[in-house]
Length: 217
Image (cartoon, rainbow, N blue to C red):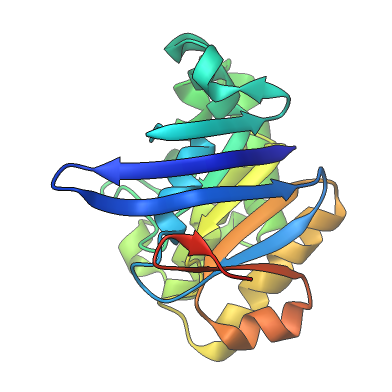
């Protein structure tokens, strides 16, 4: 499902974010990418998602080599992936429903189908009753679940999450990881970047450790 071969990512000023990354994530697998802040976890997820390009190396996602397809096909590939951010990235002036619907509207999905999919996604994360609320009226845990619903509404084959429990207390963090595990059981490949050892130990899934841009375990 996801393969990286000798991937490097350098930024201007000779900053090396990732160095010689080689890894494989099987279809339907749930893995954690772990390491301290600044280790390169977010950069790795962005490379998989296609919003960053590697300086060197090959990245294959869902059978497609990202370095050999054009931007149009990268955008198509990205539609099959969901991304959950640490800071939620919800639009404060739009309702919960509108935030989730936006993911489908930009894809040109008919309004009737959008409504059906959005309500199903909100029901799945337990927030259908909050559909007409604005994000800032919700708790942190509820906002994160809205962000998850937005990622899931596209029915992605791959779900990427960047420090999804970073702003949550331990009980809420556990509930979010349990939700990811449920999503994974239904067939979605899940990759979670986190430095939270507690949720990693509880989830009991494969872990890839990164330090200073290199895989160390």
